Image: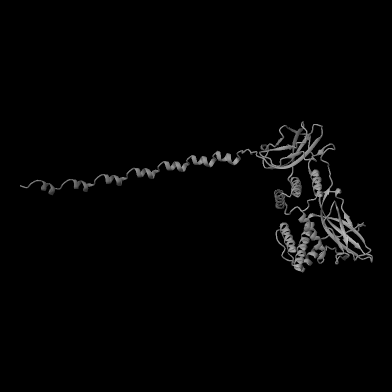
Length: 443
């Protein structure tokens, strides 16, 4: 995490040193001399605006213009390309391996987000990107806010979820010359629209409740730390949620898991703890396309606040568990369903402590297979099949010989004539007088 922060710091330096790639408006004077330097990192909704020393006697103003996420992503990709070109120019100018490593890292980051490396690092590419950004930026309004300490801020408590903005900055010089600059931000609101818990409820601040993140055959365990006095009672309940809400909460919890692993490694220096942190980062990147870079306590607080605002409120339908287990009857549904599991720890002193976990479970119910009309039709022979079983008239005709066949069975007159020898054959049977004479000896 420290290394990431060092890289981010160098990015800021590179942006200052290199030739202008400032986002600009299409009205007023463009900040061609980088007189305005807007911080790209905000803390607690605040950031800074630096004005170079050669500008004396000025007034500084800013305003926020909300944009949609598609426009934010278009501008961000163009700016990411400009950043790669800046690293490339730094390396070309110094030939130092350190800057080359930053260039490679920026290229890898770009590929993870957009699926390819940036190949064109020409000055023409810079000009093209600048022109496109200029055409995409929404125009500022007349509602400027004066800043006397060179800071800007956004009240995050006024909205919940993620919103995208363009921050416009106006530098009004002593000679009445006006210079404009702009930067884009994606901010996470901290507003809790509907509190999910009653005032007397206590969210598990000491991690007294540990819910297993793996459910086997619809069952899991709930561990209670030893510092909880004996005599507690444990309850749980399931609340079904939609897929979008599940994904939002899961991403926030994945980020908290990464920060937890990093803090453990920072405290112990153990290589095994580092492997856990590294694996969590790789898992996060495989799901969301980038590594988590913000491991601050502010990030933890923001994620916790958002999760609490997203969780659906539990009901009064608690189920008692006497063996510190929870279960979900998977046989009651088919396909995947997403749930929040609420757990209530009722201590012996009457205090209630709550915790929650999200799960994606696969039902095991088998749908009943009812024969459809087609199957019934197959079991019952149709008229055609019955017709096949019953010989038709033609088949009966084949069984009964026709007159011709009868004629074949009865010999005709010719055949009878063949059976009766004709006169010639009778004559052959009777020896003629000469043969008789041969049989009788002569005198």
